[in-house]
Image (cartoon, rainbow over all chains, first blue to last red; front, side):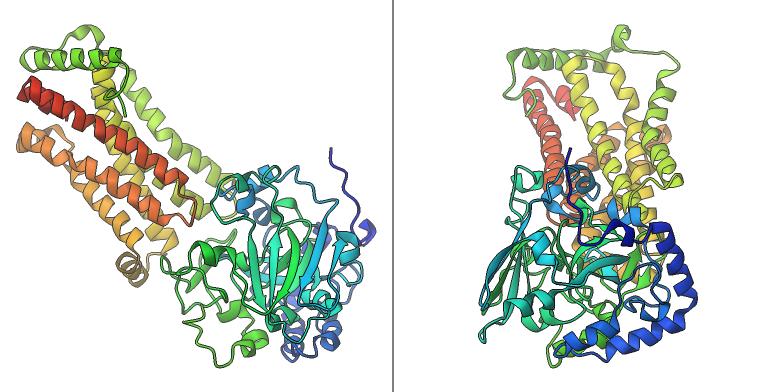
Length: 326
Length: 238
């Protein structure tokens, strides 16, 4: 039996799922309030993220006022049923079938867990996960999640801005990119015993992308600790990019000057670019990206540029040819 | 590969089977090993329908995972390929075991391959492409794995149409058999469709490729041996 230490959030503070979903419905009706919030977020800038964070997104716990609610997903974006998100996973470290991670990650040990911050930073360090998370305020963010395979979901994450961590580490002047690495442990991760990808899985962001307030490190979802198959104990969530950019079970962040290599780009550079921003106009070579199906829904819906976060992140890519930089 | 490099006993059996078949071409096959029980065909029919019923049940109980439509699409496609493999396995199995009754199920199981391929196509066109003609044409034209998948279904179509006894008569045995060797092409294009469709993990498509290589390789081997033994035996091996 695995003994899991309690996370930073006392159990008493975690919203029961029923209450949570109920509140979602209420919010769905009060769409106007959500929109007002969205406008507030659109006004914030990566540069003054620290100041705008507090106003833009509030912790989604029972008892908070609706006005403070995270505005990240809009009307028509019902939160996806939890079981669909926990039973349907692309986490090749635990098997390439969507249903395999839920099964094979059951006994994955997420404590003790260390996270290394290294590279071009003034304060490199190796943290115990508890110490790594503690200085940040864990907030709820309801984000659209768009997989490169043309399915999508709306997920209430618990997490904190990646910018928090980077700012604490103090990137040097030459820092341009962040590389993140997943645990490499074939004994625990049966998928790593086959060379399906070049293990360990790595991902990367440009530093300004990483500093954007929408980019978070997540420790939970649906008001609970992150399930193993969803990337426990710590994963990245970058809602405007295809899901594979949101690397799971992170053990290392390395700040670099040169663009890091990323797992899927190495595996198939024609199909998976470094940026991989959600873009309905740039098709995957083998399928269209114009539409997507929400998990649990019957009909498809149009995919939005930057997964609906164009107002927030579009300017990061001003002047870039998004067809070339797919 | 079966038999070719296999134990001598299997080779002996295959030779014996070829002899039996040569005899069978002249006289009626020995009735001894042919099962004529009335319930066997309905039983095989029911078993072949099983995967579809299981899928329907899982769809009905919402047990198909996060994206039920994707699951339906993948499962029906895989079952189409499996039935192609089962159908192609009957002739070698008969030759190796001398169990002639197997051939009675070949037409039905081949039609099930077409049936599952058609359900697969319907799920794709109806639920995935949502019957949008523009999306369908674009997908078939632009994406090679879809093109070859669609071509595979088109190849199955004449086989299903000419599966009746009337069509066998109309075409004549020789021409009918020649036409139905399209099944070999279907096995190849179907596997390529699968291989090109998967995102990264090619283990399973390659497993099918191996199975089909064995089944088609056996035919080549039997054909060569048969030609040495006489033209009729060569034909029977196909």
